[in-house]
Length: 405
Image (cartoon, rainbow, N blue to C red; front, side, top):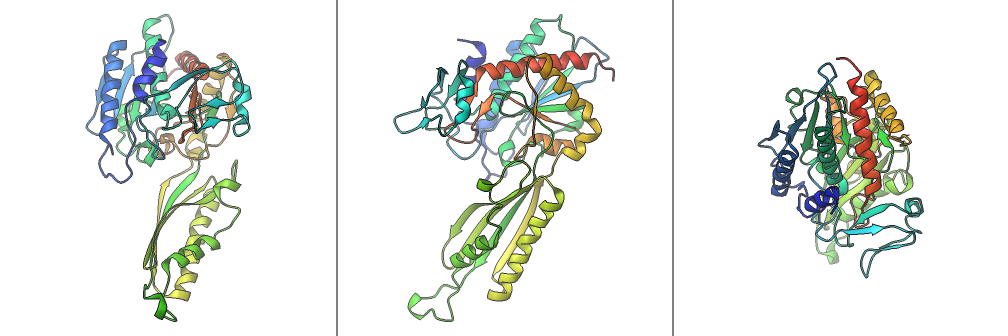
């Protein structure tokens, strides 16, 4: 079996899903387990400067052969998303010749639903069996780092400086950089290898906040409820109805932000709601937070002091931190072109470890892995595009070696 596929299958089978309800770091034991496997794989390749710290972060170095070159980093994450079972023990290899792709008797990826499939004819894909996530987000990134390290160690004729590697826990729940040691990492800049389609490159992302709302209703027997009952469920429906209809994820694209009702639970007596706010514009982001404040103030004047509101910023748009270092974006763009990949620069309609790391002093754009349909049963990975990502990073290392610190 191809070594990349062998590694991927091994990583996919480890349940490294993060747990937003846990307060530990990492939030799940499976991430520590995957980290230990990664450490052993790095050792097998021949790396010696490797560490898995107490919080699950794995650090390693690909030693350079050009001392004057700036040290840069490559960063991926251990955890998989929380939407479905993250342990994929039955991935399927598809030598795609067109048409719909059957996952199991109940689910298939159709060209009607996913028209981009017609552009992938002739590529080798790895899909799920329809019952779990694949885990390409971001285990494909881990496999890419392995392949890059192996190629550079086995080909000393390729000129490059020191390359620092990091694999973080809990990216999917927004905590990836929380205990990241930027000073110890020792890179001047870095790239997260956590994107999707071939040629994808991002240095802009959403500003993000989480909104938590608690509604204390008044539950009495419905037969004697007149002028007494306050139905917390109906108040929750009222909150949702007062938000702009066209600023929901299903109606937005590009630079358009949104409000998403992410969780709703409760009954007549009490309801808890969780929203997420996203916008690339800091001004519009702040306006969205004020919209919630205005809505709660209005409903409080109507129902009394029964609603509590908590808004917590999660991360910010990395663009303002990248702009002073645009040469690192230009280097990646040049590397893609030299590797035969057409750069596709777009804003991330989400976030990445790189967003928080950029605000911690480590400018960190994002690049592609070849993965599609993250966070669901239709997730798949193009092995051809993954190989292109490896080629791009090798070119990036060579371009960087021509620079001076």
